[in-house]
Length: 429
Image 1 (spheres, rainbow, N blue to C red):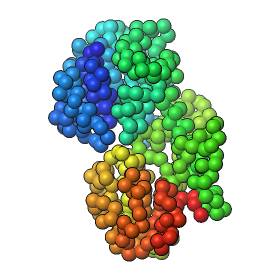
Image 2 (spheres, rainbow, N blue to C red; image 1 turned 120 degrees about the vertical axis):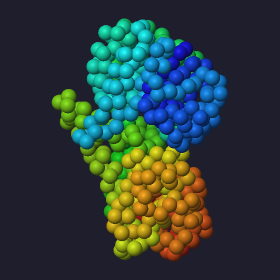
Image 3 (cartoon, one colour; image 1 turned 180 degrees about the vertical axis):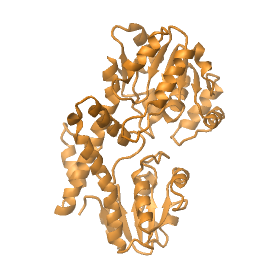
Image 4 (cartoon, one colour; image 1 turned 135 degrees about the vertical axis):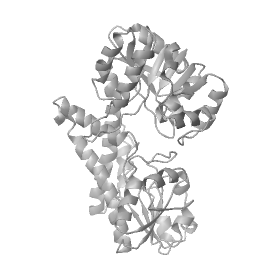
């Protein structure tokens, strides 16, 4: 099929390259000339395992092109909108880019084509946007994304479900989306066809649930810390309950990134607008618990060094999660900022996120690896659970004082204590 993707950030670029790899002819459109140049040259503007190879293969096939010219979408049958919806000053989603993309498509897309929203938007947005398109005989559907950073290609090509939100009776939109995702559907991926409001709610509801689960176990960590319990053992025990499950029950410094924090805040703001803010009032506490975990790490560092002013603190990890260079609302970067503000000398490292972090927080000292960061440090703090940090052994590091604060609870406390280290986890005795 002939497809276009409007917005070639993380979501859009991966989607465009993945669709081209399936045999579709894809044009990606973005307003940033430098991003378009980099993608056209096969140079990913972000870190995602396997993406560079996928991008270059799709470009080499001749089925993928990028441009800043929105008129290039005129020949496409299906247009995917994958622009950002950043958090506004009031916590609500900023729909400026979505509105601009749809307005541009109303002008350039041919009658009879289909616009498919992939951006995460407040419920009710699609119905509003549809009014601008139907006057031009352009249909609208919503196809929420469920990408996990670090697994984006897998989640695009072999998702655990595909959701279509369509207007009542729009079988044409379903047929065209079936053609787009024919390979995944042939492989047995579950397809759900729902109305437009439900499709908009699916993504934010999923993120709200995951955020709630993470904050729940972090709330248990707060109780464990004052009772001498071990939150990791607690999570193992309750995770065996099939109704609960063990995934996302890892206590630590909390969640971050470009989705969960902003999405739960936007969800709560939209609920307030709809007059049902009480229904998701618990999300305010979910957010508060998450932010308290960051402050707790800073408290543990202060307890370890006595006085943060002048203390040398080694931070292992800056990205909000491993296998990503994303530092948006990163707990690790927030902890670094708080430590630096208190006068600590922070030496930080990350396999992929150093350069992005340095642009946001240039006052830190950045080094290439964990051993260099830890050398001479008063305390070592693990904040992003990269595989190379999970595999660290006590002998790998030579700090001035053997104190490890494990902000992700991924190290073996007994092994580190046996080598003379003071080990502190979150919610662990």
